[in-house]
Image (cartoon, rainbow, N blue to C red):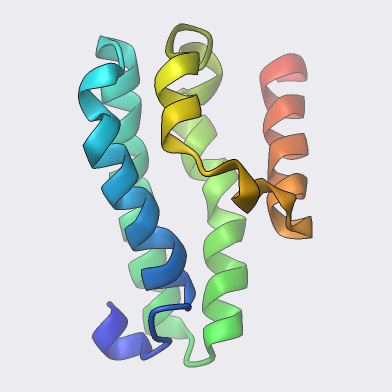
Length: 119
């Protein structure tokens, strides 16, 4: 996808997507069975949505925005609210929490919390 988008090492695909793909691969065996299913499902969902986004957009900023907007849908449709309690440690080890301090990331955290708490 990066060969089409050409956003570089700091763009969404390489700077964020590939980073977390590698981090989830490294920590995969730390997840329980349901957590592993969530990781696989979420990875597939994000890849499909990102491919569609890249094919429809030429601007790196648009790719990043639309890709981030797809995260909550993929996380929840794959069952994040059911698996996070039993997988807190591997999730904590996987996420780079400095990435959560952007406005976009904080909005996602709030959206996920609402979905998990209130449906």
